[in-house]
Amino acid sequence: MSQKFVHINGTLVPYEQATAPLYDHSLLYGDGAFEGIRSYNGKVFKLDEHLDRMYYSAKALAIDLPVTQDVMRNSLLELCRVNDHQNGYIRLTITRGTFLGLDPKHSNGPANVYISTEQLTLYPQAMYDNGLTMITVSTRVPPTFVSDPRIKCTGKYTNNIQAKMEANRAGVGEGVMLNLEGYVMECTGDNIFIVKNGVIRTPPPSTCGLVGITRTTVIQVARAAGIQVDEALLTPYDIYTADECFLTGTGAEVIPAVVLDGRSIGTGKPGPVTGRVIGLFRQHTRETGVAF
Ligand SMILES: Cc1ncc(COP(=O)(O)O)c(C=O)c1O
Image 1 (tube, rainbow, N blue to C red):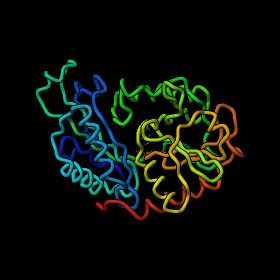
Image 2 (cartoon, rainbow, N blue to C red):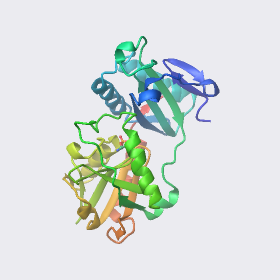
Image 3 (cartoon, helix red, strand yellow):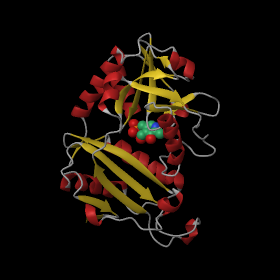
């Protein structure tokens, strides 16, 4: 059982009794940030990288967190322990606090911190076996002067949800999101990679949307295994004409993508480099992590 307790503002609360306040600023205005994290075999994967990103998101949003990174780390590990969350998903959400009205001057209490554990399946197994089909969606990733994609802000996900609904309406598994200039950024909840002539390519941090922790991990393990990985601007053309394509994310892990906008990518089947990357990534999840 993965969810006996949740952590709310430093207190373990039985799952059935866990509630969020009506005037939570993220509920009212999307004014918060979150991290999706995974545990594998009793260890939390890339925990400190996720906590760093969470604290950077809070800093960028000027949300003053009531606990240090160490205290939050201990709360998260404690929750995994009491829930015996050996393998699964961990959601860490922070919000500006509980108050009505936009103006943070009206806040008279601390930011809220919620931590929960779940079992999450982002895509059906058939999509891992056969590869995802995708379309390029019309919903664009907002430019940095509207919302910096490096901030994992709760509110910005309304845009990603619209993009996901476009993909759903088209009957495909994912939507490729472009920036205003037409370059490929990311999918609705994943980063994107292509393989061309044995070389892996992915958009650079400045145009990859969220700088995914799985993305960074995949780049590291692939390079360590001697596979060349280049960061380069991509357009849909690069995906249409690639040999292989795959997506990465904490929820999805590494998943092949085989069709974009009705064009088969390579053979239209998951390719050998993607298969190798999946193996390297899985091996890495077994070798690293913070035990709880
Ligand atoms: C929009 C978006 N891009 C990319 C990612 C992948 O990031 P990560 O590998 O850190 O989970 C996610 C998932 O968190 C996401 O929501």
